[in-house]
Image 1 (cartoon, helix red, strand yellow):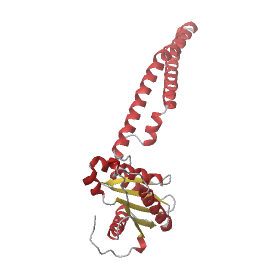
Image 2 (tube, helix red, strand yellow; image 1 turned 135 degrees about the horizontal axis):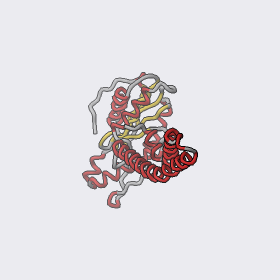
Image 3 (tube, rainbow, N blue to C red; image 1 turned 90 degrees about the vertical axis):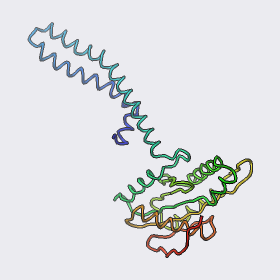
Image 4 (cartoon, helix red, strand yellow; image 1 turned 120 degrees about the vertical axis):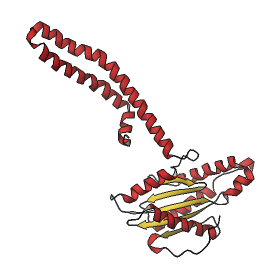
Length: 260
């Protein structure tokens, strides 16, 4: 499989130009060397004609051929990239799907470059089943797109958002401390609460509950998700429409049943 860098390179028009230019030139060089060796003993006139043909014929034949091949390669690279995006993206919300989100977070956590600090937020829509029951699944889909758009609107460049399944989203915030994570969770909560959602012309207030795990040092996605998931259901248990953020080194015990 091509690397993302290789695929991106093949998509550019500059790559088409390079193939169209340097491919024929390479053919000319090979033809010149071959003809110089093969026709060297036939005299200056024959050698001159051979060298001329070694320049003209490869250019006439190779330029359109290399242009055609480079365009085909470019088209395949673009399609390969689009298929990759489809495979990694949730079609409804345009967020990363669970597998792609998890993989990207794991890649960041396993990287040795830069300080290992950050937070994982798990965001869940409150009373989402009621939206589907009262207004239908189309309204539920609209609510999910509004939730994703609202969350994305407050994120920084470099933050990750993924749909974990159903009405649950994950947000990864690299480089934040607990105060930053709590501030971001509150911004997400407020952005969702202020979003306009009017199924069948009736205003309906969207809210989310948020659980978060802040880390400082080596960790893994499974640990962060487990802690954030516990905090999420703690927020649900405490009345919804709120955030509960905890540091992985200061996690209080949890003793309650999950509530929707």
